[in-house]
Image (cartoon, rainbow, N blue to C red; front, side, top):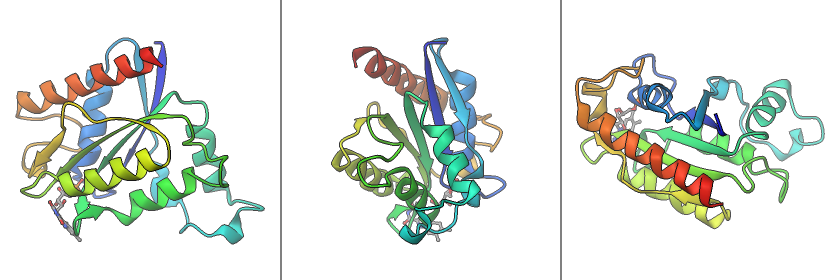
Length: 181
Ligand SMILES: Cc1cc2nc3c(=O)[nH]c(=O)nc-3n(C[C@H](O)[C@H](O)[C@H](O)COP(=O)(O)O)c2cc1C
């Protein structure tokens, strides 16, 4: 293993297709990549600057998990044309204190499983947010799975080999970006 990636799912639904994409990525990861799934995203409180002087344990734990990683994989549903509040809240925690957030300098890649549109709009917002934060964002090939909840199980198994192929290609692109840095 050469690179360590921390993955977050923007859905805590038991049967989540996005959690499934994370687990599938763990299974398909090339030998150079270790993907650590941070599952306690729902333990984070709502972002509150007043908590910064003495952040609660859930925040310390979250930041400690991401800090040593080379990159981050975000898998999120699209809720009302954007990323979920859960995912946005995690991004906010990872970008503060200003200029010292644990997301700083990380190579990031976003995948989505949404409704009929595959969550493309929500993914687009996340890609834009990360680019504006100065992160290198790996966006190709596109992984925006329409109605993935019908084909992706939360344990990362799928009936559709095309989903595995495109996710595998994205992971290869992520490794290439990490190598090029
Ligand atoms: C509150 C809510 C809003 C949603 N809005 C959208 C949307 O704007 N676009 C879309 O493609 N899917 C939308 N969906 C469908 C989800 O993206 C879809 O069910 C997805 O599979 C949920 O992710 P999960 O399987 O990881 O829990 C919405 C679902 C919910 C619950």
